[in-house]
Image 1 (cartoon, helix red, strand yellow):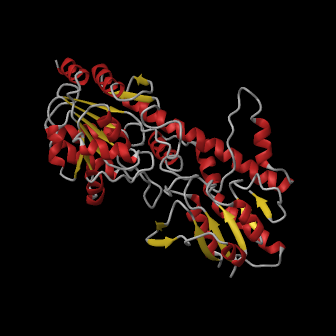
Image 2 (cartoon, rainbow, N blue to C red):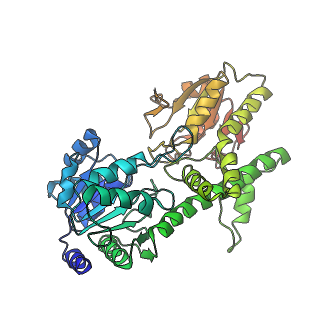
Image 3 (cartoon, rainbow, N blue to C red):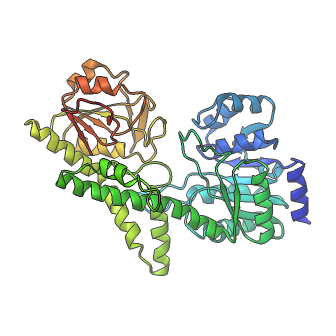
Length: 438
């Protein structure tokens, strides 16, 4: 009965959607649900986010400003800090952060707190889906008991519970929330069918069903661990190639001409973003419960983790060639976002590069046209207002740590004494006498 009733409500767009967490994952999802004709309520503990959504003011790059304003004005999307409104929804997507704590252990407090808040007001016949990236077993071992105990309802009989990993790539001009394929795994076949139907009613991408939440959770970990390992391989070979006088960038470009069996990954000063630097730690942590050590994964993590310090060492050697010390050197860092042309600096390796530079005594400033200020380890820093010839000439070294396309790299090359390009952002510059590439 519950399954058929929910399928009927999905078909008739009578489902009221709730999205917990209005960040990089939650807000785009809420917007797509509302655009598809489902009345949507966004929940967040930060009043400023709620106020901005209710005013139709967008703060996420992957959301179109006019789309948000239109659906808010029409009444299809609203936001609140009051979780009692969970009683009014039929579908709840939990899209909250899953960071690491100070000991590099999974911090699932946001997921736990959200589940506790939802459970208090969960009504019979509701679908609950976790989208936050986490370790295999979270949905069944953590969420299910919290929801059942807090609501007095039974999973599979009174409500459906599943996991559908977010796939958000900030700044991607082709794949957005709406057209990216979705994976769904739930507790029971009926739950999987109904939750998948809900996503199919909203998204254009394929919805792929798997047999359990744990499979879907592991699938997400595999996606990002795959990238972590391959980037670790390339970074390790980059260190070797530097010793051998070979450009790893040229090596990868040559290798990718093979039309099968190879996917290009490029050197970088470390990993950034909300998933790739974190997910392998979740898997390694969970693996220890089974007495299993993920040696290949842990090796790649070690390589990628030391890349910021390696880049600073390379920069110091570059200064040394012109008889300058890193201690007291004026270093200008170009770009603190974790990837090009976005304002997201979560886990950005550039922040650790700056930290390592200052630990060596350098006087560091930064310029990022996308990130006017950032907060890291309790301190807030501001970008210099403009990248000028005078600023470049005053620097002993310029380090490129994000390949933003709206930076005038010709001007950088012409006015900087030394440049260490960790992203190969200046690959098209002809005069390379003052440029060293990672």
